[in-house]
Length: 293
Image 1: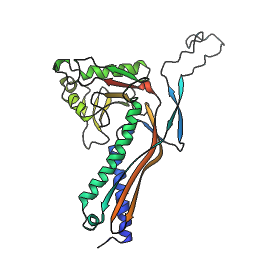
Image 2: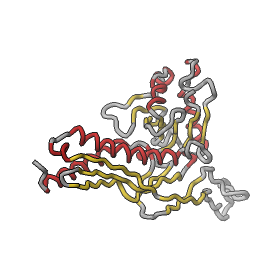
Image 3: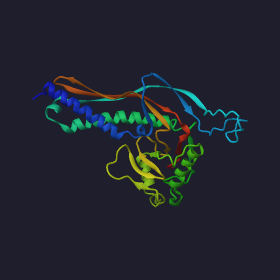
Image 4: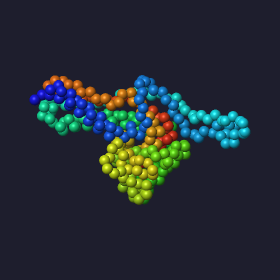
């Protein structure tokens, strides 16, 4: 029997709820940036530099004379612009599958739509934070050839040292990586294999695998930071930074789902999100390169 109008509405609401629920659990990079709403097409923002403020020549913070004026402190910034982008996808569930309650088709279609939107948004955020894997304002540390995490000489592999060097670069720029409580280490699944099988990591007192239901790519904690895995990061890169400080996702339209009914033929499920990522604090990030040979 074909759906009544009320059943069609219920089905639409169920699909919309499921798609949004699946997506919320799958975002990784989006969870690492500040999220705000915004309605502008062209979004202007200030990108900060992290040099400690000194007051300038002849106006030291230390040693203000009695009754003298205080030095004017101002952090250097650069005005940037970013245009919003729409990320979306759609899939079809055919009428015959609806009539026969083919749950597998429904689940696979929703999964495909979620993957399309989540991957696109997360990929854009990663490319913004990593400056498309070619750092110019964020910190970068290159692992020496022969000391990659998959080096043929096993004793040369030292992810602990490499991540600590990235954290050092961030701390040097006056961003407290270790004490912020928001440090993160992000990599893809293949790279994580070399991290989790390295004895220097496994035996490190700060390493701990996440327990329970894994969501949003969080798999472990290490060096006071949370370790995330995501497919949007390339094989030979690891992004280290401070979550919610490094950048901002300006959301013009949250994930929105529409179900378009073509009677006796198909349901077209369409989902999209509109927003833009802003790299606001580049020196709170460090890109590890040459991670894998």
